[in-house]
Figure 1 (cartoon, rainbow, N blue to C red):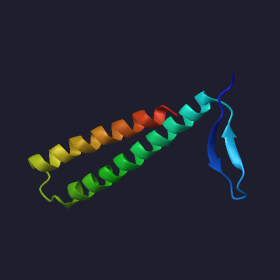
Figure 2: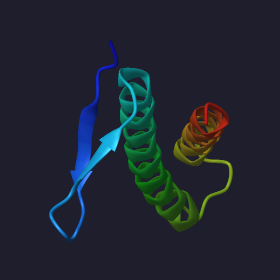
Figure 3: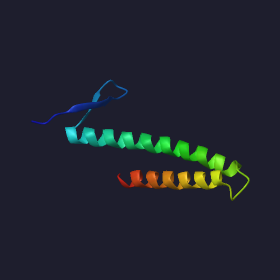
Figure 4: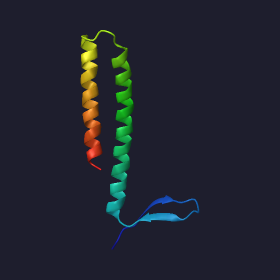
Length: 83
């Protein structure tokens, strides 16, 4: 038995069906990870703006934000490698 799940409806009102449950799960996971990447990139841009606004290069805050930026970039790359 094959389980078919409706993924979306096109502009003509026709249902677009995925061929299996595993494809549905794969597409769902891809959408989830794409949303995670978008969220992390938004956060990364905010950190970059703050980092660039700090004038004192040797300050603790600037070094801390630099660490956060590095970690976010690593997380984004890790998620992107999944698909």
